[in-house]
Length: 288
Image (cartoon, rainbow, N blue to C red; front, side):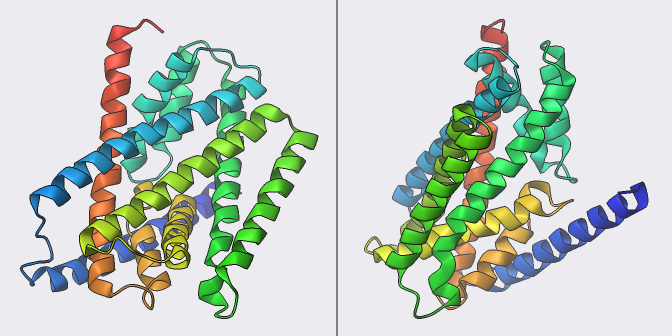
């Protein structure tokens, strides 16, 4: 693909992200006129702070996955070295362009003595694996698109796909890549659960049915995937929120959904900051 086409794709992605941000922002401003839209009690604040720390901790799963992918390409190194590199670079995903965290990871990895070619291959495989994991988990959304498709059946489809992907990865790659794939499944499941937890916390509805909870969490994963794959959208900003509003408009009231989307974005951002600070502390505490 030539440079002009790449620039066009990036421009389109940035335009979609901007449109999504504007759309969601206007909705928030509209509902923000109500005094209770941004109001939180003390228990809710403490719970959201706790979820931010959980979100930050979940990045360890990404480090484990990346370590396995690097090992597959012959890049050796300690877990703590991977933690430092991943943590210091991951925060750059918020820079417009949605690629600077990859460039930063490449630079830090090369500075640590890793092969540049192996790091590029690892980055590509990482993108493929986490996108595949998100796609597989998104089958739990089938009941939204097919009203008579039971949640139980979508769970069976998910189990079948997990077995199929794991089998193919074992046969054509090796167990390290299977381990990485499982890590990405776990990480995305945590993200979906975090979104569900925020929604339940803000609405004071702690008794959601299993089928509704599954749809809500998998919708977040699918929205995350769309934002992740959109070029030019920093951390999927705008795109993810827009997709959630489109997917769940008939499942959750728009006001509740907007609040959950807003606070979930804040939680994930603070989680990434916590992860970055932990990596920064590690950089000065350990010579790895």
